[in-house]
Amino acid sequence: MRRFYINKNAVKTGKIIISGKEAHHIKDVIRLKPGDRFIGFDGEGKNYTLRITETGAGIRAEIEKVSLQQINMPKVLLACALPKKSKMDYIIEKATELGVTDIIPMVTEHTIMKIDKASYANKQKRWERITLEASKQCGRDTLPKIYGITNFKDALKLVEKLNYKDRIMPYVCEGAVYIKDILLQSLNSVAIFIGPEGDFSKKEVGLAKRYNFKTASLGELVLKVDTAVIFAISAFRILRIQTF
Image (cartoon, rainbow, N blue to C red; front, side, top):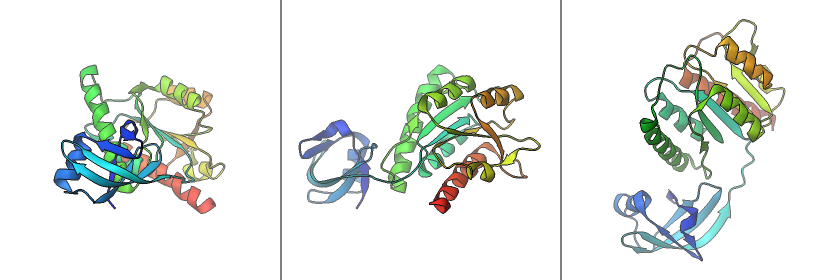
């Protein structure tokens, strides 16, 4: 069955009303009609099997079944330095597909991308739409939390507040331990910091180490920001699967 996002506040006793873009997509794009069924997810782990009863200005449906997602997946926080152009859109989409729990767009010393307050609100809304569409596509029932654009020091404090125990920072330097060897030491929930094209500064690395971050190598090749994000998260996911 087709999957659509529903606002949990729209759920009433045994019924639900869907409006806005999702209602338009159900009625005018997919062309579902009264009697048809679909799956609604609320972004917090609940799935609803729904049967359409009315298609007007909004979609009215009866709730036939409610289920709660129970996937044993460790939490992953991604703090990523803002890359140039629209690469952050791609990064957020792929991070969502790979099951990242928390996403922090980050400004570091070597970050080139600058965002003013007026354009930030639009970017935040677009990123939230991207996580929604990516979650629908990949079958994910929970939406990642996207935090506001944060400076490096405050991002470190947020990791502490959210209580991520394992903390990794890929960094291009001689003698860095390969990321696989770090991940094999512990496969609990992990915070991953990805720097800009110019990498983290030595000052930032020193500060991160005071927050118990471990610097890691992603191999012999220097990766772009978006490639490094996918590589690091995928390495964690693969090692997690192989261990359990």
